[in-house]
Amino acid sequence: MALPKTRYSRARQGERRAHLAIKLPRLVECSQCHQLRRPHTICQNCGYYDGREVIKTE
Image (cartoon, rainbow, N blue to C red; front, side, top):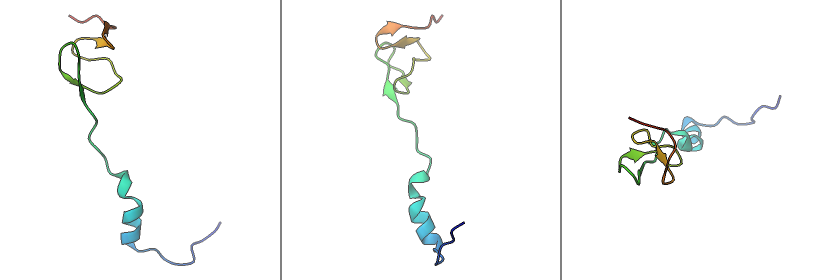
């Protein structure tokens, strides 16, 4: 296996891994019930997706 010729500092490791941080999920408003939901998913509150009912809710 290949080995690096020089040692990389922790600061350089951190720069490389800066994009690995956990981000908050994006949320959009449901067009039917106006609750926040994740995009491209069925609304857990009303069961609608893309303007039509997909899951029956009570």
